[in-house]
Image (cartoon, rainbow over all chains, first blue to last red; front, side):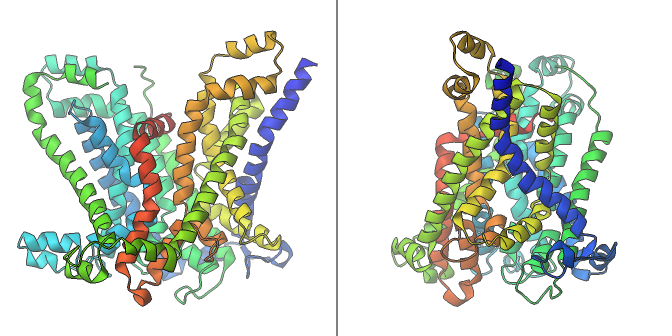
Length: 303
Length: 285
């Protein structure tokens, strides 16, 4: 009797969560995967109207100049942005865990961009920092007497990728800084005390104590960074609000324009290829996950 | 924590902290200038903004009226409030009971469910959007508030379950044992005894969900892209797109402020809780 009641409770309590998962994650993921091997003209077409196309959709993607550009763009965001974000986040985390005053205040301010809508943050950068008429960069360089730099059009096609990267990374630094700070604070203080007594300087301590003990945290962070960069979308839309530009286009923007878009840049409507973009991005996340778990082994240290 | 750290530092080492202070102060200063200027510009006029002389022609709170009424930001704001508040309640109602079962009754099925939920955290939105769009269109449910709320609930369930499971695990099961002895059924025990104990975790994860749903853009762009249904993020974006026709920069900056104000205020009051939540959720590895 008692056991039966528990079964009822389990079903009632787990039911809605499991059903919503099946409806919104499992079913769509499987259908998108299958769809990527079919030619599908309209997104609302029934399965009976799909025609099998093998790897054609993937071939279409890899022969599209704009798609290849979008892949190069996210590879750049992942690699250069990743190096920038991880380096700055580690630096700030090391500073804030070294016993500075007002630690919580600094930490809170640096994390702040993460709670603000990306559309709002992007607009602030695009319409203020990079503005060629009254922008922060323009006026700062002008005050410093650097006429050459103040005349730079930061959002022109040759600079926009860098401008986008810096603006995006500025917010992400705060998030990874919090994760790194928590990782550093988990390391017992006596490790550092002993090192100090033995005569190891700050830099050596960071290199030989902090970094090795943060392996697990780094691995998680790399996966989190990958998950957030493959779906790079809003920033790209805000930085080129009218049409996707080669400098800012990402696979997700490309897919959006191809399946839902109304502009003339991506003219071909090919829902199957849109699905293939999704499959490729998921495979990238999976690949990075597997590689980083194999490459960065936890030494099984307990502390 | 800072106590341990400061005892770690000798006086001499503290002298070297100046470069560190300079770096973090410069970073924070930039953040303040960025947000401060936007707020100042939102009370100025487009002409003064372009001349680089904010407030030259005085203080202009009417930008907010223009943004809210003329540019429809008022409608978007109410939409966002409806979506965000309903979704937060929905997410909690679906996730908390599920997380409780996963935490209290470990089993093979439970493990499978838990792993599937964690895997969902890595699934890009692009993987799920097309079938959902096809399904919803064929059922004729597009452009409905209720649908967008249901989507927001479903999408945020995996993270919330993941977050809450650890929380329930830390509540000693002696509470249920005592309740069972007193003749309280297991379901009632959950609602009356366990859920109140889990309140701090539920509040933290709900703050996260509030921020996530308030700032959500992609789903709303696809499922609620008309003036009556748009939330603020999509509304601001459509406003930016039409800037070259309207040319109302001051009104746009007012809209930016209106959009970030709710999550910004939430953060001012609850930053410690939010920061503690970020690290406890992500650090598991």
